[in-house]
Length: 352
Image (cartoon, rainbow, N blue to C red; front, top):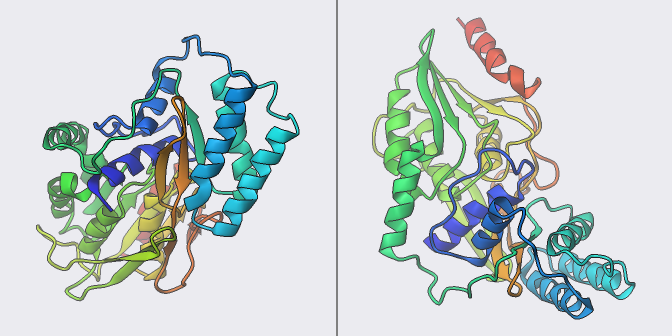
């Protein structure tokens, strides 16, 4: 997957996760249709959008239906296409003259069929730019994004050594690994010599699976460990993710206890991190069942104002051969998310 696609995926995860208002990343700097739609929704709530007529609604529904062709499950794609076309033909969208209303209704109808929280339709008041000719962002765009990521702490809200020599890392987003490996290395080196580690993912909305693998690598030993796979239907291609025993800096290692804090807000790549460690019996998960989004996405410009966010792949855990889509990752210790950190400290203290 190209860097541009992964940068775009980060923005889409934040836009389509279960908790839109919290912990969103800076947008990718190449101006894509999805980015503009998200920015327009957030920054121009008082703009006077053009009213949709029958022809515009018909064309938008047809464009969204076409964008579903690469959805991760072909049978579900066909069912979603049939649903929104039937709703349109029955006149159920006729009263929707506002683009945001139509986008919201289409999202609801598509999710009613697919139950896929990554799937969504977005609307931009402003005319969207055309799709970029290149799949690669320019060096200037990458460096600008890198500067923003660095200013925001590489997606890490906090890293510290708590009383009792307990490491604590609060990760909010897994930015592309090329941009954050130095920051993650510094954070994991800081907690490498602690007696136990708490990784807080309660406000993590996902990100780059390569970065998930990079950070997981600090929690294992010298032997490579198979973490997760992503299968893409439209390419009939599987990408494997393994630990890298040679990640730089000091390693926490494979023997000391790890506790992962999760919540209903934990989504996508945050869920993958938790699920990887759960299935490998490398961590104790504490908190609430996660949001349930295991499908990587692509963004498609439907027309001048609408963007379809379509999941095009699925995670496959190498141990269970399944994933957490629709079910979430289950904690070992179920407590309200607000109590998860205190509970982790209690469990660590009890091991003395």
